[in-house]
Length: 199
Length: 249
Image 1 (tube, rainbow over the protein chains, first blue to last red):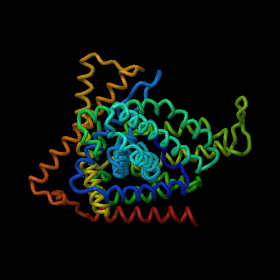
Image 2: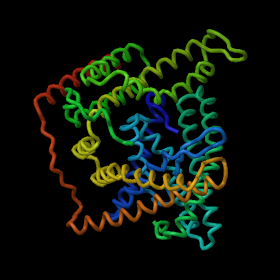
Image 3: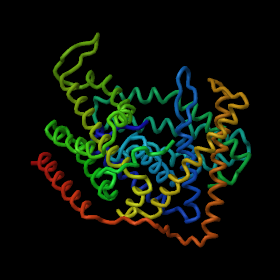
Image 4: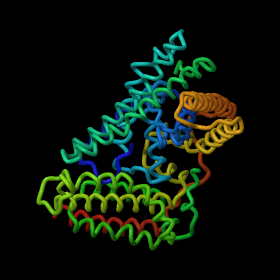
């Protein structure tokens, strides 16, 4: 979930920008020249995938897939998500410049955490175990993102507490669906093109 | 899907150097984002107003773009007036709305829309490729700029792939619902999209190497700094001086 412009306090905005700068620098430093087209094309694919709506109960939600972005890109998840959000801000006015740092951090930090927890596990010989790792990555990616969005609001002011609680509740059903979809994506990639999971 | 309909136009705003636009919007967003005083916001409202008249965009089109932006704001209106400490104005069952809460919501809505509107007017009146080029001139890391070019260039391509895949699914009678079958099919579809992206990136890199790529992107279109850009820069500078004066003095 994007937080709009003009809502968060200066300390929250600045810490978000700081974390995002460090993460992006780490992501770019580890990127060899031949990896630039790959990272970019995967970013385009994820940009498109994030426009896909899946049914959730009577309503529908768009996919986030930050857990999977983390597994496939590692630290490069930071520049990839930063670019995706910049394009969304420039093209559809979702989010904006001052919140770019916070919004990127809220999605990319969980992605990197998922990378360290699961990138070995998704290569497991048993497809079922790999699928479970995928599920957990998708689930945890959204869970941590929701928590970080909520914390960004609460650190801005105590009076955001109810909104923050609502943000987490809204994310709950999405977590499970993200987990299931990510699990299937991992199973599919492992079967069809295991090198992609090698990173 | 990602066409930028506002980027084609012949107004003064469309002709303005993208480097000036990026500097102005960055400065403006950061000055307004943490502002709370109505006087400063009133002064800040002049910029998007003037830009709007200069841009010659139609008000209906701009308003349509502003609507989805206010979804998050609406969410705040449902909660904040009741959770902000202060003097009670009216009660709704067990909930009491405070004057300070409503005032705070008004300020948030106001500045949020100011920043959105200015961003829309300044950035969507330039093609994205020109903006990325401008970011390069503003000393962003060249790898990030290259990533940006590629990502933007291939989003329509990946979207075409996605449309083809989902049409194929529809032709075979796929109907999304709340079931495992839907999530599995969606997962496989996105897996296929990722696979195609991966394989295409390998072909792209090989094609780049075959053409002697050595790490530099060359461009045939160069920015020319005109007197009008200098003048616009000066006017913006004076405007921001006024803003800073109101904000801090």
